[in-house]
Structure formats: structure tokens, C-alpha cells
Image 1 (spheres, rainbow, N blue to C red):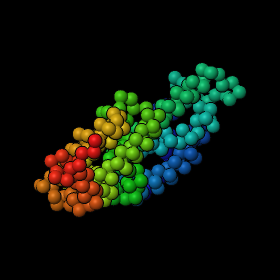
Image 2: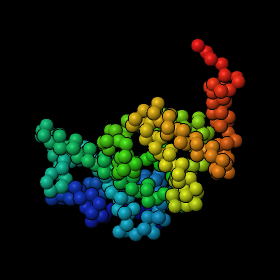
Image 3: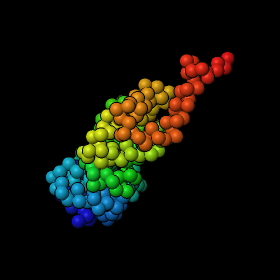
Image 4: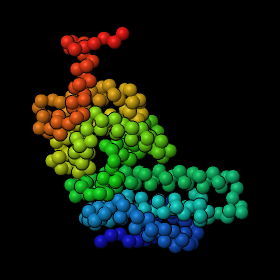
Length: 282
């Protein structure tokens, strides 16, 4: 059964800053929390995700972070309408007529904190949803477009020195560009097969593609946080070497029979000095 409400105790457990000495904040936020629950239940969980939430239990990391995602998203929608600030005892309400510069700074700080909590919570939810059941749903496809996601950026952040929300939003175009380039080099079909395995963590397919998934994730990160030029060198060569290894011929048959493979080897042939057809254009 889909989660349809968040109690006051739930809210204060998953989002301690929502604890307040002022009455009425939970009541004011409850309609928006229910709205956010409806959105995430449909767009993130779906039927398979809801089953995983139920099976995991109310004390699980998945359940905790799902409620935290919903709660932080709701308060982000409401905080300026409700004139919320963060006080030593939790949320407080200020009046627009008396909103001092110091209070505005506190409002901005609260917004930054909630936004980061929102993304980190979503990172953990997606991490624990990945698997055979949820990983084959439309929700998985919509929420995991690349083999580099919120968990990599906000939790692991191996390549990015900072893990702020603005940085995540800025890097989206770089990830999209990296993905488009990779699809040109190894074909849409082959990348989609590997991406599907990535979404279904813990399955035999995931185990089969585990090694190249690591290479592809590194490719995205180098492209986004170093440069596309560097990513096109060693990271790209490592991917192609696995795809073209004779021991992997059956696993990567889709790539080996693709136009992308033919184009890669046509370009290689044309640019190899050892080839009798090589032409030096000086």
C-alpha cells in the first residue's frame, strides 16, 4: 500500500530541523507533504518501488530517506510562503513586514540545507530501489538516465571537490554531452543494454557488465569534472578495449554489429600510417 501520510513523529524523526516550539507548522505543512507523497509515489516509486518500501520496513534506510525526501521537498515548496527560518529550537515563522537582512540570510541558509537534504535523500532512495523489480520500470528509466547519479555526486563525490546543489545542476549539461558522445561511439543500443544492467543492481546482468559500468562511470566523471578532451583519451580507450576484447564478443555483440563499431574502425583505418591507404595531408 502506498504511503499516503507523514505523521508529526515521522516528520521530526526524518527532518529534525522541522521540530519547532511554535504550534501549527506541521498542520500547515501537511497538505503539501501529502501532495509531494502523491508525486513521488507515482514518479519515483511506482508499484514496484512501493513494494520495496513496504518490504524494507519502517526502520530501514530506504523508508527513512523516502520520508526525508518527501518532507524536505514539501518544506522547500512552503518555506517562503510560510516565512520559515531556522532557529536554535527548529523552524520558526517570521513576518514579511519585519524580515531583517539577518533573517533573510537565515531563510537562504535554510533553503540551501533543505535542497541538499532533498538530493541526498533521493540519492539513497534510488540506490536502494535499484534491482531487478524496480530497475525494469519506467520510473527507473526516468530517474536514472546515466550511469552517474545523485549518489555519486552528493555522497561519494570522488571527482567533484564540492557537492553543493548548484554544482549538481550545472553539471547536468556536461553529463548530457558525455552521454551523447558515448552513444555515438558505442551505439545507443549497446549503451542502453549496459544502462539497464546498471539499474538492476544485484542481478546476473549487473554482474556481467560490472567492469565496464565502472569504466563508463569514470568516463562521465572525467568528462564533467576534468575535461571532454581527457575523457576521450584513456577513459574512452578503456571502454572500447573491453567492448572489442575477443573474450567478450558474445557479451558485446550489439556493439560489434553496430554502425558505431564500423565507424570507429573506418576512422582508425584512415588515420593509421601503417595502412597502405594512408594519405598524409600536409
